Image 1 (cartoon, rainbow, N blue to C red):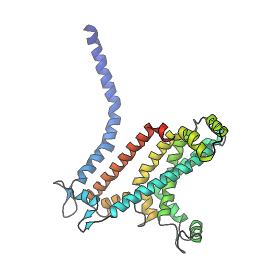
Image 2 (image 1 turned 30 degrees about the horizontal axis):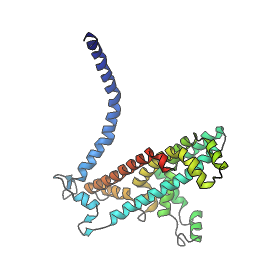
Image 3 (image 1 turned 90 degrees about the horizontal axis):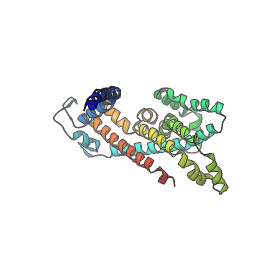
Length: 300
């Protein structure tokens, strides 16, 4: 008993030290993550007064509007914005993955003295404000630019029109903004590739996609999965790039949410749309985790 009593102060001190270590991070997460989510949930179920200010008692009107049911009946506008967001995010993520593999293997083919500089060259543009980068693409994709003239000659856009605004401009903007988030984790995974497996695959007459699928993809799968999460989720909720480069032609769910909190002033409607986006994002993360836990099966 005496020895146990002597251990109690030490145990309590350990708990105090543990709580002191955890509290700053827990407080940060609670204030900047948990509290905003709680506020969004409360707003989504709030009513609005005649001035549009959120008020109580609770109401399901915001969720009804988010699902497309308005005063004039059902409208599929929200569903089309959601589908457009999913498609553009998936296409941007897939394009980033394909381009990132090429960039990563190009960097790995250079000498060690150049690899750090080349990787830095990929990352440095992301340090610039996203709005500035979007305006740069607006200038590059205007009607009289080289890219737009090439698109006019092959029939992608009508004469005297440019790639901006439109879906192509949004895709290019999303890829340009998020490809560093795919390159960095892929590069970290590719540095640990066992090149003897590629040599063995070549000796067994594996070429091209077959060699990549069985020798490269399994070894870089963790980096690819991390890159997909880092690109897909922000691309799905992005509103700056579609707003500036897409105009009214390529508005995504993020633009619809931003308009409710700024132009329309219908906060419960915007909060309900935000809840839908958060739910879809959570489902995507859970799906990615399941893929990560079964990575050895996925790449067979």
